[in-house]
Image (cartoon, rainbow, N blue to C red; front, top):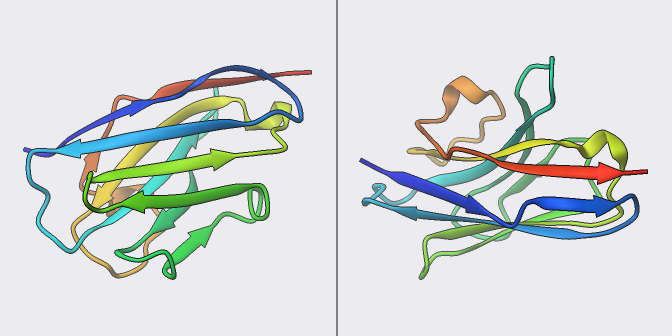
Length: 124
């Protein structure tokens, strides 16, 4: 069973930066894609960014394009989300997910494994 553990969340002022990490263990079958989603109170879980097996296969939500960068270290089975120019509306619980396919997907139901989430709060 694949386990995902997120870290790096916290409280930051608007305009600031945070880096989230997500380590995968338990043997996801390669190749696999990794992604970040987020869920704000009272809202549906929404796609943030996705990366395939290489840095060239990234996809971003329009709302974070140019501000967030997703990357991964395959040797460490870890995915990162560098968040810059944070806005109050970025406040949410951020979830890491794994999809056992490299076919691009941005819907949550297409992902096979999920982490527990890490809270990101951006204050004005």
